[in-house]
Every structure is written in C-alpha cells, then in structure tokens.
Amino acid sequence: MTDLEKTAEIVIIGGGVIGCSIAYHLACRGCADVVLLEREHLLGAGSTGRNAGGVRHQFSTETNIRLSIESIKMIENFSAEMDCETVFHQDGYLFLLSSQEQMKTFQKSVELQRSLGVPVEILPVDDIPHLIGGLNLDGIVGATYCAKDGIAEPASITQGYAKQAKRLGARIYRDTEVTGIKLEGSRVAAVQTNQGEISTRVVVNAAGPWARQIGEMVGLDIPVLPFRRHIFTTHPFPATPRNRLMVIDFATTFYFHREGGGVLMGMSDKDEPSSFNQSVNWEFFDSLIEVATRRFPALADAQVANAWAGLYEMTPDANPILGRVSAIEGLILANGFSGHGFQHAPAVGKLIAEVILDGKATTIDISEFAYERFSGRTINREVNVV
Image 1 (cartoon, rainbow, N blue to C red):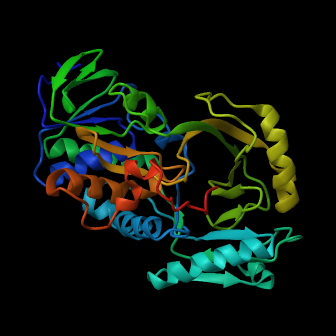
Image 2: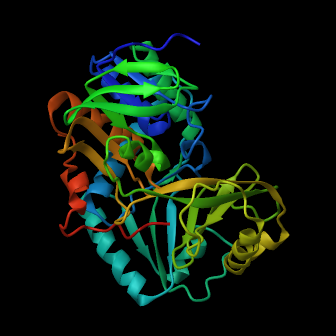
C-alpha cells in the first residue's frame, strides 16, 4: 500500500458512492488535493454495494425531487461522461396505494413533481395490469407511475467516479480506518487513521451508517441511526416480469423488480430496532414471502437464489444532512440519506463540491437539509420512504 499523504486540502471519510462522487466533482473543478479514506478493502463495500439500485423522481419534498432530477440526468449520461460502462434500465417505478389517505398524499406529491417537470401519472386500478401482469390487486385503490424512474448499477457508478477522481489527481486509500479528528479550537486540523495522520482544513463526513461515530470524534451528535434492510433474489421462474419495473406496495413496503431471469425483492421490518447487524434473518424472510406471494402470487413458485442485508442510515425526518456545521469550521456533512443515497449521489457530489469551493450550493438550494434544522425548527419530513 502507498504511504499515506501527510497533508491534504480536503479529506473525505467514506469510500461509498457519496464519497467517490464528492471526490470526483471536487477534482473535476480543479481541486485535486483530495484524499478519500475507506476502511474496507474495496470501495462501495457498505450500503452502496448492498442496495437494490433503485432511482426515482417520486418523492414528497421539493428538494428531494430536484436532487432526483439532477442525479437522473447525470446517470443517463454517465457512461459517456465518465468513460465507464454502466446500465440504466428506465422501466419506471409503480407505487401501489391501498387507501384513500395514501392516494390523497401521493396526489399532492404528484402535483409537486409535475410542477417541476416530472412526467408522473396517477393510475386507476384497471390500468395497472397494462404495466405488469400477475399482480393481486385486492385492496389497491390506485397507483402512481413514472416511466423515467428505473434501476441503475451502484458498483459501476461508484467505480466510475473513483476512476475519474484518481485520473484527475485525487488519492484514494483503502484499508484505512479513521480513528480520530483533531481540532484547533473549533476548527478542523487533522484526521487520524490507523495508517497515520493527515493535516487538513476540510473534512467531509461521508461515512454512511457510521456518520454518528465520526461526529462523536469532534463532539457532534449527528442524528443518524443504522437500520438493517434485507434483499432476496430468486432463480428464474415462468412468470418473471418482462422488464425491470420497480413495484412497491407502499402500505407494506414490499418491493420487487426483475433481476436477471428472476426477481429481486425486499421489505422493511418496522419492528426491528436500530443496529449494525448485517446478517440475514431468515425468520424475517417468512414474513416477507407471505406478503410477497399475496401481492404477486407467482413468487410462490420461485426459489431463493441469494440473500443479503445492508444498512439504511436514517434521520428523524428521512432527509439527508448536507453542508457545513456552524459549530465546527471545516467540517462538511453528507449523511443520513435514509435509503436514497445511491440515487442522489451524483447531485450530492456536485453540491458538496459547490459548498466547499464556492461557499454554498448553487445548483440546488439545500439549506433545508442543514444540520442545524434539528435544533427546534419545524422540519419537512420525506413521506415516500420504503
């Protein structure tokens, strides 16, 4: 392993897609004195490498919708811009809604999405089978659908950002765990690691579910908690959907889409407490498959091929924490994406680069996602969380 740099203008903690995107966008702006630190042997080994790859416009807050618009535009052009092969299947997202209350909430979100130029449809139940056959629509009162949503590849996008960041001069160190952050007064001075110390004036916390632990190194309480989420894939079976449309049963949070010749599926366990546990709980699979076969009966004939678990990094309002921290000069946060980090990573990398180099984000106003919002102000909760 190459000896660790002794100094850097900017140090990024975390080598997932968020950290790699930030490194690339800084280097792309001409700021090449950037060091990215990843404690694992591989980049994207945490939440990035364990997510379902979903990318959507269908959020309930304006800022999240704008993040999606910007990010999806960048993902659509990723292969050409980054000289990196990746696949983006824009077969859409279909939210199945099972109450008039849900319909009312989603209709309000659709009005906002449309006002920002997103082509979202509200579908009656009779139109749903035109998009996907084989669903049991008992209890469903309607749906929303956006054809520009889809499934992308977390690994290739992460590696694409890392490759181009390095080409532009950024340095990436794997197997390097951050053990502390030194302050001079209330200002960042250095990052301590198991490989040595790096003097720096700017630190970006992009540590995913471990964001809170990084914050504790400077006495900052970052309200991010890890929650386990499972994904199961199946072998091919006769009724596999014809495309990669993402179907979400919003009431239960059960979702699935085609993956290879089978299906990828998951669901939240609302009763599970916060933890860093990433082992597969097969007892939970029994609960998931009961919901799954009720909504998509053909899954009863499918056999599980693979299973894994990863971590959501949840905040109290299910929105990210982005930008500077007023109490600690030189500390930048890019945390708490609440299950949406991969899909918003392209825009977030660009915006954090603007915060650092220009003093504030200009492409999108992210002020409502400031860390200080939790100190008594009214918060705008993201509703469309799976």
